[in-house]
Length: 323
Length: 122
Image 1: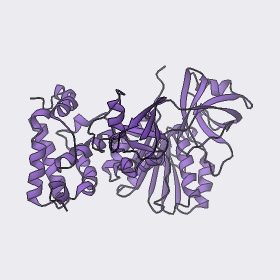
Image 2: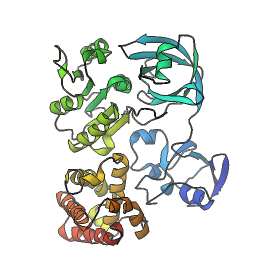
Image 3: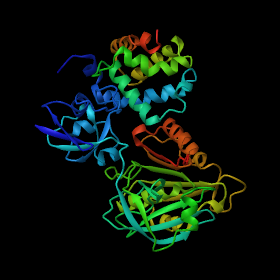
Image 4: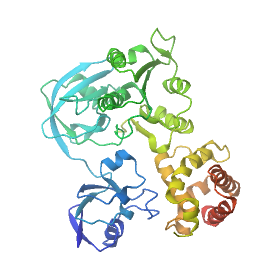
């Protein structure tokens, strides 16, 4: 009989029994609703062993790639170890290689993980100041291109982790980070699809990673990046992105400033409005949205109404910490 | 080949084609859009898909009690028959847009209609 391992216990799964029925039958509480493989309430992650493809139907490709599946429609044919999606992530240590100022409130932190570290550009890690003070930062580096990993940290007034990174962290320091998580990253497999990426502030970090990952993966369709801030001073990596656009005919970069007159080479207006004015019909497009949560929420709705399919919209709102 | 409503409408492929169209109509509908404000759009799209699967006569295990519990917070915000009617209208328009024959639309509408009392907590 096939065994299901969950939180340190092993449960015997009867033939044709679903992971959901097996676990709940043994008194384990797993959230569920439709129990028909549709509503996605019972989503879990396979840590070891593989799950049948029908248990991943309807999930976003980036979730499938991370071995997420629906417990109600998963009838395992081999032993598997499973976890709930919000289960704790593993922790590893990393050495700070460099801290570089990008503008008045954002620094680029380069880290070398001290253990094997797998990730996709655009995912995030939790960054530990100490055991209980943790913030999430997106990965701007690309595993196939960059030797180290890169985070962009914006200084938040009174921010316990960001002020520490800005004011106290030095090259050579050892810090703890979590394993990478999140489903906002590039998936190969549809290289001709049009890509739209919209970000504000340090929301550029995951988008910078995703753009470079897509180009390195030989994405041939148009890639349109829009980065917005109040003023030119709030933007960064401007020259790098202009250089990248010169190198790749299918990539364009539009920096946007929302206050005052925009100088030459910059667009004037709210980044989301500028992008939607340029591209009013997003039917068939894949969309990535990162940064300010209000912008991301509005953009999710507006890009969907402009024709992008829900399954093609990837969003990473940078929700501020409450503690 | 089964002759169920679900198969006749086109099964899972039909649900996948319908969900974006239906959800867009609902969000643009001023009569009901406020009930969808501040919700997680990915989760909502999955729920819309589950609803359409059910209305198309597809596999589901929803009970009347699930429907009551799932909509109680909206009933508290004033969800009533007029809003249910608006959703029914959007469902019909979605199926029409997908060129589903009128007789099958009527069957799907009847299934959706059968949840009215539970959804509205009556």
